[in-house]
Length: 230
Image (cartoon, rainbow, N blue to C red; front, side, top):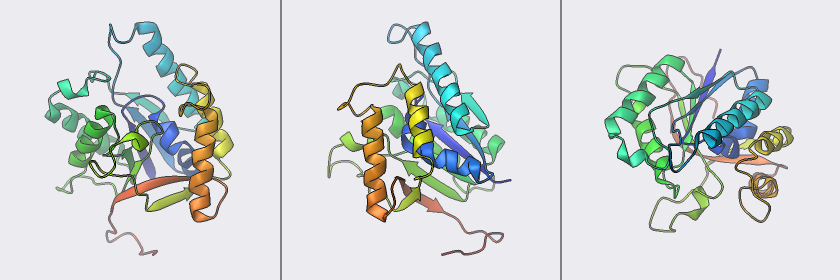
């Protein structure tokens, strides 16, 4: 069975960026695992808020059909730059070798949140083709309020080159988003149901469907066992 692994810096990033695609993959018979890299620490975050966010993530993932939700404790939220880079590299490499996903989803390199940037870089390190298992597809997803607020022309821009039609799954994605009550804000805040729906409609209109999620294809490997389906 083909497996997919979605790596997120924080709970809700993965649903914002790939919730519809996750639901579609599950319905197509794929196993999807989500790994949340960071955990909040006091005094920036209290224990009640942290546990609430983790419960919301599990509940949202259950709606989407995620097989397993993993939390990589030991990496502080909003302070990932204080962790030696090799430690995050090793943690993600061990995760990839354990799950052995065919498709790996990661945050976009140009996101304004430094945690996202560092997770992307360590994910790239973790899947270098060096003799161990390597996913055949590596996709970077967009996260509202992070991907779109980078500095144009000064940092990498999100120019998608792969779209997934999620017209049949947008309602499930929005139901999963609603679970994150600790994160949702009223429209016109970007962390709102209306904004998520609008982005899906916009990405869908880009490619002629009602709703889509957009990705940057970072790498695609056609090894001997894969048929070229171009």
